[in-house]
Image 1: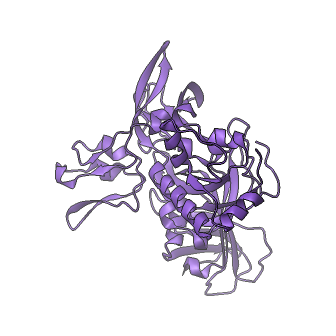
Image 2: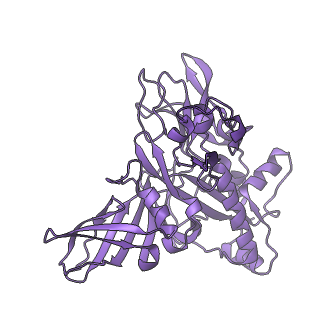
Image 3: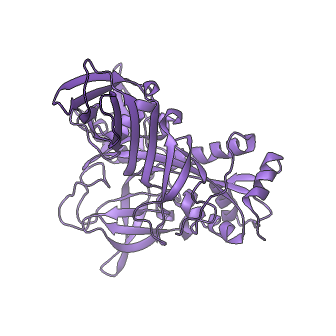
Length: 427
């Protein structure tokens, strides 16, 4: 049985379509229920994770106290921006590109991911400019005053990423850990939302292509091609969306031991056009491969499954401030990659709006203030498979599930419209 997106859109418009999240489908499969292509029309998927391949394009007039020919260097909250090639002589315009991996020269641990969230939260941004004439000035701006602000990806939503262990004999500072990575394969970190990840649910990219409408950080955007380092085994996507319409809770900065990184979130609808798409949707975490990589040499060691990461675990961190031991220095505050733990009015706070549910606090707090079962990854060493405890998750499955649920409601309610691709991407 083959269907077209137009067929499914007509069912949606007439309120006859069955829309489900990928998690709902997988839960039915796990219970042993039979699902056919006649039972579901659209499946919503999502992922939220650190995605280094992110950049913003900004264009706005500078509030300069004097006339200048062109800007040669620009910093936003200390984060360096690349001045665009457009001919802006004497126009007072700034055309900028800001890489998601850029670090502020003014604030330790602050990067472009933090900047993007601050912008979307309508916070005032400090703008520092050095002109071609070697004059300098500073001004301020908010997102409302920036007429063009688009967030792009160079590679997002990998079909599934990987877990990492450190096989060397020394700790390593890396973007794959918020703390120094313990040596001798003592601990593991992971990325990837497993069975609910968009490209896992359409690995042949039969419905996801150039022109597919998606939600990027909560704003409607579009897929515009395949991402860098994309391959048939590990496809990923390029997309674009308007920053003015984004949800700050779905984006932000994440501090790693190698510097701040950028968080991004995607929700993608998968129209169930044929049986092969449904077969991919019905694959559970335990059937979804997860590569275990040596973070030192970046070579694969073993292939397990995302059941290691997401079966029988806690998706969010439990918080019990009454269990606080009143340590002289709070390691949970010091190590939190989101700055989501702090004291307010002499009371310990876990800011759920900032919390990424990475779980690192459960490993750094000597008391039981923060608790969560994070699971273990299976790795083969010396001919034997051993379990290595996960200490950090760089994907937030709990928030991703909420995004998929919201997209489902938006499709049923008619506020999110499915689009057919204009050109296929070759995975």
